Image 1 (spheres, rainbow, N blue to C red):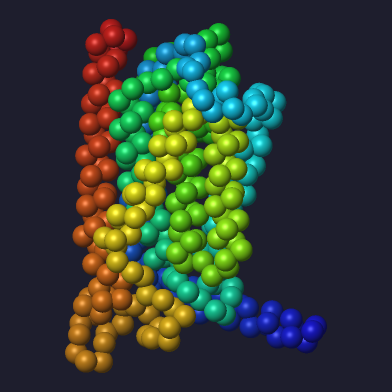
Image 2: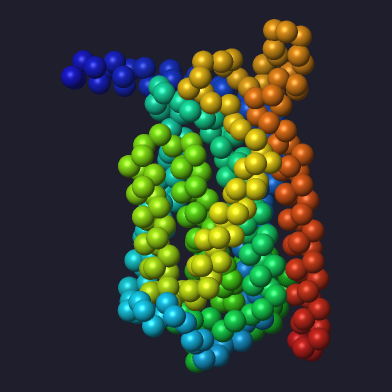
Length: 312
C-alpha cells in the first residue's frame, strides 16, 4: 500500500504540470470572457453597496418562514455562513480536481467559464429586482435603531467604489430579492449534478442547499420570498443558458488532447473548437452585453433617486 502511494505521489508533479499546460492553452483563448465574469462579481458587489444607500429600515414584514422556523438569534448567525463557506470551498476544490486525479471529465477553464455565465445572468436579474423595490431588511443590523441600517451620503466616488470590503458586503442592507448566497449555492450544486461523478455527493449537495435555505431564513438574513425566488430563478437561468452553451467536451471519452487542435479532415482550428465546445461564444457575449446594459441603467436610476431626494 505504501509503495502504491509513493508511486502516486511521485507522479503527481508531472500530472500537475501536464494539466497546467493544457489549461493555459485554453485560458489563452478564454481569458477575456473569464475576466469579464470576474469583473462582474465586483459590479454586483458595487450594486449591492449602492442599494444600501437607498435602504430605509422599518418593521419586519410578516413572513411565513419566520413563523415556522425558530429564530437562531444574532449570536448564531454564523452557522449559515459556515455551511455556505463549506459549499463554496468544496466546489472550488472540485473544479481543480483535473490537476490532481488521473480520471478527468472536464477542463477547469471551461467549467468556470460556464459557471460564471450562470452567475452573471442570475446576478443581473437580482440587481433588477432589489433596485425595483427596497424592502426593510429583516437582519439585525438592518432594523430601526441600528447604526448600520442607513448609510450617510458618500463623501466621494471612491467611497462607493471601494464598497467598504469586506465589512460592506457582510453588513449590507436592501439587496434582498433574491438571495445571493442561494445563487452561488444552487449554481454550484446544479453544476456538480451535471459534471460530477459521485451520486452520494450529488444527493448531499441538494440536502446542503435545502439546509442552507432554512438557515438563511432562520438567521433572518432574508425573507422567505428571497430564497423561494432564488430556487426557481437560478434553476431556470441554468436550464436556458445551459441549452445555449451546448455541451463541453467529455474528457472521459478518449478524443484529442485539447478542444482547440485542428482536425485531420481539414477543418480549421476554430471550426473544431466550435464542434467540441458548442457555439457558446456568441451566447456568452450576449450575456455580458445584457449585463452591462442592466448595470448602466441601474446606476442611472441610483443617481436619479439621489437627485430627486435632494441628497446630491
